[in-house]
Image 1: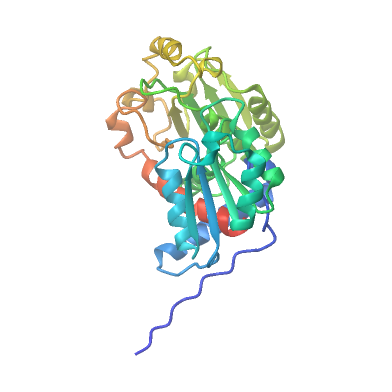
Image 2: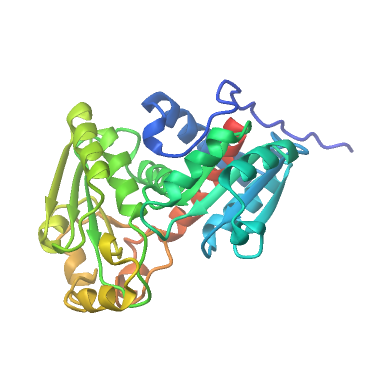
Length: 336
């Protein structure tokens, strides 16, 4: 007896060729399309429906930093879409010898169908590098994380929040907070990306950090402007407890001092002053009873967050990580 395979729903093609460099570059309607496409692809994946929207196509994944979720979500995602992903390590390619963004964009455009870049550790470099590559490429360029924004992560965060609370996010409070971590000086792009994207959907966004840990002013201004347009609010405090009070979503994570990225010893000395900025059960009790805890991972366990919280019933870190796969697929399927 022959079994019938359900056909995947088509993906709209009017976004082909578009770059994904910051969420702010796409309209609200285009963000909604990306979210809907990710939800569609997720449902088809769970139902075992093949989604070969990019059959025989090639994506180049350029990494200037280590990765687990980002690399695997794009590599697995490209396979599930019927194509192939090439991993390019900046340290073992000619980028390390000074190959220019112009050459990378121009040449890889003749080899395949999409360029994905992660370049996040040095303030002032990543976003500029991606935009220069994109200016010379004839195929779409996707930001897998830069110094300014982590648009793939925050898109996955947004779909995770919608799965929990529904599409209407107006008046929900999200606390985006700094937290202490001793491992290394982490990029600023996740909190910056969060305040820029969540403020577009009518949410009440509270950013909390010690005085030294200010974010890039351009991203803060974008968040203010977005909140004003969407009917939400945007506030900044230097008090973690205040940020958590009556929050619906809490997102505490570490990031570095912008001026100290080239001085990690001093950066760690500054951070030591704020070891008490940790998300524990007492801190979670300040949020609403049904509040959820989120983190992009990896979390510095028992520094940024206690095991009791990250492994507890309010944690959504694993569904959040799972959604990285489907948002990556949506972005590639829409643009390539």
